[in-house]
Image 1 (cartoon, rainbow, N blue to C red):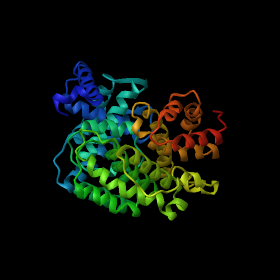
Image 2 (image 1 turned 60 degrees about the vertical axis):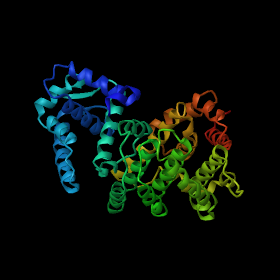
Image 3 (image 1 turned 180 degrees about the vertical axis):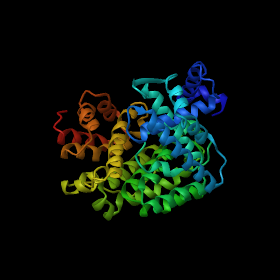
Image 4 (image 1 turned 90 degrees about the vertical axis):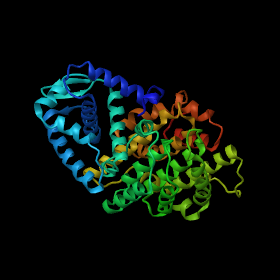
Length: 406
């Protein structure tokens, strides 16, 4: 991150604050290597849904992580050493313990530690995500969904990073090779929050593969293309490219009878983006009825399937838990970023169904009734958002099936 822009973003302020804390921590180690080390601590906590971490586990995992990064960097011919240097600091048990006893960690037991504040962990996870984007280590995206905050913070850290055709090809190839839609889903979700440039052929490569992507990845990718097109931020030199590609995309998905029947969430999502483009950019589309008005309850399974599968393997459980949490957490971000209201409202649809069916994660049970409450800040924000009036209808439907009186 350039020094001249560091204090203009939240990510830059957090980076500077952490560097100051580490610089005063009496750790006689290079500052950049320390930042990379604590970044990996955050990553290992996040990757395994851990609130605290054991020194022995951390040493073992960082040794394996350093080896995996060496293999990856050798394979792609990159010379980056940031994650490897951080892992090497943590691969020695005494030194690992020494680092965790200072700075931003709190001991919770013999050789067990947690972050003193979740904001540090969230920022450092985003920092790791940014490392993976820069060095095209997209295999790290396969185990779980990242949050909107991660994408937003990583994009601030990679303000001038160009997404190339090579990077897209690598993400798509790995997605197919590992049969894992979270790789391309997390990769494209980052693009929605970014202002960084993307090569036109790179975006076209993503869109040409859209119909072949699994349902979650296709849904996420449609949203990021439309979100970035609608935002049209003056600093985003690729905004016009996204708008040109999005217009035809939303028209096709909003009116396809197969999509309306078999992927009703995607159809409603596309139609609502279409509605927003009509109003903001004065674009005329052929008249088409909102698919959400034709929605029937026998289509519930097609939507619930996005965030819940009955398979009981560890990977599936990890992925669906992270996706439910990510789809829930984005609700709070629409308070600061109203442009994502369509994203947030549609993301909540499968989460609401998981709640009603009793298959949601504990975080959903605890938070969803409050979010849908008539007096909640999120409900009020959805009611204020006039660009797509149909979103209010969807929200009221959620309240009704969850037994919340408006």
